[in-house]
Amino acid sequence: MSETPLLEVRGLSVAFAGHEVVHGIDFSIVPGERVALVGESGSGKTVSALSLLRLAANARLGGQALFNGRDLLTLPESELRAVRGRDMAMIFQEPMTALNPLMTVGEQIAEVLVLKTDMDKTQAVKKVLELLAETGIPEPARRARAFPHQLSGGQRQRVMIAMALACQPKLLLADEPTTALDVSLRGQILDLLVRLQQSHGMAVLLITHDLNLVRRFADRIIVMENGCIVEQGPTAEVFARPQHAYTRRLIASKPVRDVVETLGVSTAVMSASDLRVVYPTPLPGVRGWFKRGEFVAVQGADFDIMKGQTLGIMGESGSGKSTLALAALGLLPFQGALHMGGQTWGANAARNKALRRQVQVVFQDPFSSLSPRMTVEEIVGEGLGVHAPQRSKNERRQLVMTALRDVGLGMADAAAMTQTLQRYPHEFSGGQRQRLAIARALIIKPSLLVLDEPTSALDVTVQKQVLQLLQKLQRERGLSYLLITHDVDVIRAMAHGVLVMKDGAVVESGPVDQVLTRPQHEYTRILVGAAG
Image (tube, rainbow, N blue to C red):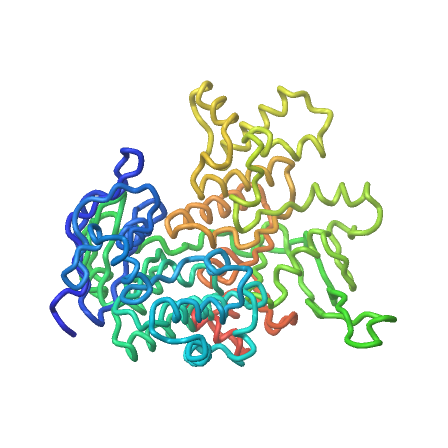
């Protein structure tokens, strides 16, 4: 590995509207090196990477970013366009928003080749198939004709990697390339990046908050906090002997188990027997005129959720875990038995309304699940309007404030609390928005919460805080949780029992210690092994 820097950043600063968010950082990357830039949301890591290619809109940049001796921050736009994609490429965090929905993925990769190289369209089409095959996409000729929405999350991310590698760049900027993926897919994408990095001899700057990925991938780590680099060095050395308090806090942010273990006889809050969920599908040809086929999303699931305990459901995307959760919430028709307090979902609206007071849900992404047009008071108190309409406006406000205090969003000062009630979701951080979602679910005092990936969109330190809050609420209120996640560490910290789902079927179930420490099914062993 060469010791002459491929990229040398000196005193990089980034400011928006006069407010500086990155404060004079320095780092370098040598050819063929794998470097991880880590930190929580808002630390400045992504905007620093975008600024290297001058992709941060309306940003005022200072300092230098020397790439092969040329300062990227002062290059004329025409010369910088030649660098983008050809010498330095970027993989964005969410491929569904980064890819053009109106073009096939093959057309999008070919466009890069035609614009950045001397290939004609025929040569570009052939190269597209080679790139897709190299990134491990099956049937590359067929997939090249697909639009982004017709591919899975893992396939879309492989398309992004193929597009980034089209011109064989010297430096690849990978911005959270695995955040939206299942744990086993994360491992596959990481292994793919390592293999391609080694075969192409390129350097990689991985931007992430996933420390498990950093351990497996990076030669060196750079830690950012509040727009400053607080620590950097060889990965093994930084993990073994972190010098800065912030680095130590990041490393210590692994979820900790703090739940009441099974004591004595407990009653079931929800029980299911031979639960089956089927989606109708069109049949080809003349048969489709007279009947429809079916896709079995959940087949023969049995489970009991005990009072004051957590049942974890783990599996990859498409395994059926979210469909099972929707059936538990009464939002999908199902076959088999599903009971809560001796009742089940049905056609009786009044009975369903009573059940909905007993089971509430906290979704994966609080930003999309909270209405941007409603204030905190309206969002958290919405359930009271449905289930306790007899309450006066003042009573509802008092209950909302109590719910906010219960989730750690209370203010001692009355004026500050009133101001909080009138704020909107976009004025809160990701962790605070998830606390709002929990407060909204808890205000009508349910006995069961369905938690659909409640921490996957959060930084590691915030994730730990939210899990601690959920554990505290469970201990104090005897709440039961149905926890859907692909994060084995979250299952290990929260769950009492586990269901492992694959292709709609439960392939393994049992107490959390038994399933995670002595997995019997090969698929479970793969999931546990991929979690590191």
